[in-house]
Length: 408
Image 1 (tube, helix red, strand yellow):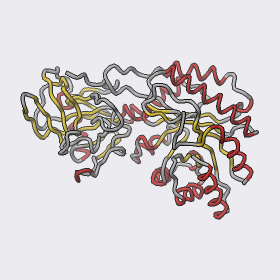
Image 2 (tube, helix red, strand yellow):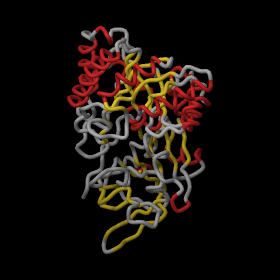
Image 3 (cartoon, helix red, strand yellow):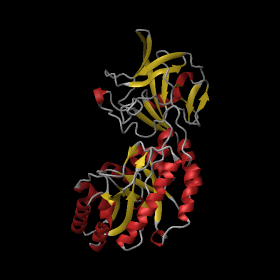
Image 4 (cartoon, one colour):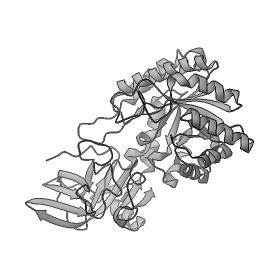
């Protein structure tokens, strides 16, 4: 038996079924037009943002990283909850524009921006987090051609990392950002060329569950920002401190202690150096805001035995839930939180493997899982599906197509 990950708090049961937003899983599937489908809970998102604001210093802005979940209704809902939006492509720029979001709230990061993307961002009035000297100079040239002073920040590749991060984004050679020691010269160059100087973006890693590691990284970010501002020779207008806040996916994972992080930040903010005294400070979060708010629903289409092992074969799989299948960066596959949605209150009484519909042995949703007896027609729920699910999975693989999405 391999344990399942912890189901996030806040999900309910209605007439024996998993309920989301006051509706049974079967009702939501009917509303979506069938399975597979993703269901995102407004109440989970609202509660997560409210809890975060209560824990963090009042001065700290909260940005939403659109790449975590770019579903347009989620973006529109976020518009009333967060302070800013971080995008990573012209496609995401189009999504925030379609949602009517003020471009002054938007910043654009990513190491491979094409000229047409830079031009679209400059034309829209979005801040460019430039990732190299070459990119900054292209932005300046495009701005000159357009007759527009571009809004430019510099993404920094710091000389430290977020310890325990699931995905390290700083420290050593990286495709992301400008090495810290070269930042002051580049900042002086873009300011001298007439750009609107928007400050620094320092992102060190993601999916950390250790408050101590995040506290240390944030302290390092503030210290580095102060040193860089001194080298630049003027105060920083804005500092994006990055994110890194993780959520529990696997057995043994515990929730992040945001109260400890907020308390440490409050102390740091009480003694900021002069160069940061009036800086607009924010963090950038995606997975932490929406990850636990999503559930992937898929239907069992076959129940079969092979050499004494029971397989529940679903109409979903890794083409929608690449991370849950264990093929999105994990070294050793572990089980995500998963349940039989149509028998949500039932007691686990058998060990089964839950697999998808693709003809590859990589298509696994749960291995040796203890679950209630389930058969053809029952619904399976994969939790923690609100981030890097629909948009980060190969939906076109084998021609099955994307899953429906709902915000309820």
